[in-house]
Length: 225
Image (cartoon, rainbow, N blue to C red; front, side, top):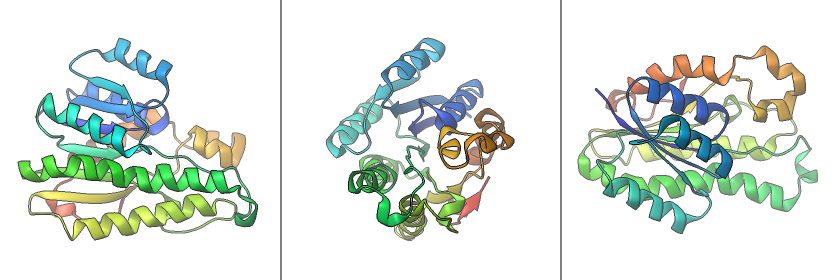
């Protein structure tokens, strides 16, 4: 059965690969990102009924307006994937610039809150839907020089599992660790060594079916692909 799927941060990496897999599997993808050129490419590649908009998830008013447009054009999303994320350049915590720390928190944690806050009322009213918040192995463990990122992903784990206890019957919220994937984010940490990890496209071949089968039975479970 075809589903309406919302994905944030879909212009690159995991979001882009996941969007392409869902489209190929017959689902409708409604996504956002900040790269205007990449969004134009997505529109050219996939066309309607898919919709790709330029939205900054750190702007709560912009997120609210985007959610209204999505809901007004059809049913609330059956699946909401909060994928947008950034990481600090490798550095000890006390050497991380304040604006960099703020940006990581704003995108990775507050942005997820803004998107949930915007879409959840309509999903709740429909009585169904799955919220997938991308976490990380660094949301359940730590490494040096990525403390801001670790802090936000540990925050995603806690926020999602608390949200799961608040949801009405029929809905689910899942913190999902995608595993180690060869993305620009991973390369910022490990350089060329990231090439030994699977590509986003290979990951999406496993992650797409995995996400589609999530339901109320998985509510609150910290899962991994």
